Length: 393
Image (cartoon, rainbow, N blue to C red):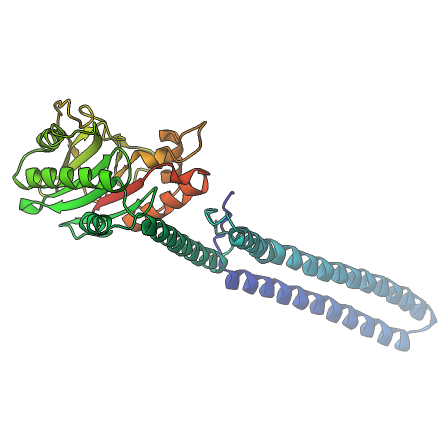
């Protein structure tokens, strides 16, 4: 749906209509006044003139009457045109955006259509109402998802699941030096996902961003995820680079008997040096988004294989990371969230991100997830994780 915008507020537009109406009425009044003065002057001349002069004055009076009739006709047409144009503008500026918002709200209210994004339109006041309605829709959708996850969690009823969930819980907005961070994990089944992300404070005000995705779901995937997270967290806090942290994470799979594997992306932000270093173990690339550039992105591309019992080696890459730059990373559940025939391409996701005017992490994550979900009939195929990290100083 194309978003319609207006530069003037509703109050300003109605005030302009009022000013135009007043000006039109003043012009009509002046025309009538001038015509009346002409008629009065001609009538007085008729009364005081001789017969010949009276005939000429009568002819002049008839001309004045004709001009007065024309002026009144023009004034009447102008008044009708003003009323018609006021109605057209009122409909275009207010009634049509209001009807559009009403249609969207009724669409979202239908069962099974809550993923439909509400697109605000019209003057600023109506756009503000539409934005509030979209925020309410997201909150209702989140509560619905939480209720569904709780129901599925009851089916998994187990103290182990509850303990794993508590241990793997991630703060949505962790505190990090010089950074704003926000992320969300949407579990495909129950309350325990095979995805995990975290922002780890390191020495010298550095921060490590981890995104892990273990194959599978449920408590077994959670156990592998817990072990992998612990190994890599210890490695990073010991001062190793992202590539070495992945090497140590892969070592934790050597004794695994179930043949599981995982993808992982590790990025270390150093505000003092103005850099971000990353290593990627077969994970979706993620992007480094420069400040103020909606159409440019640097992929955080894989630098080695998946994490598995086969081992491997990983290279650490480095790029500049200045104030306003954003690291946006996700799990494969986000780009697989279409249907069996078509997954979301990088270009599809780039169009969604470039259409979002803000780079504030919380709003960026919420808008991307809402837009992708609106286009994805098979949203629950896999765990979905999305994290945004922005440098603010």
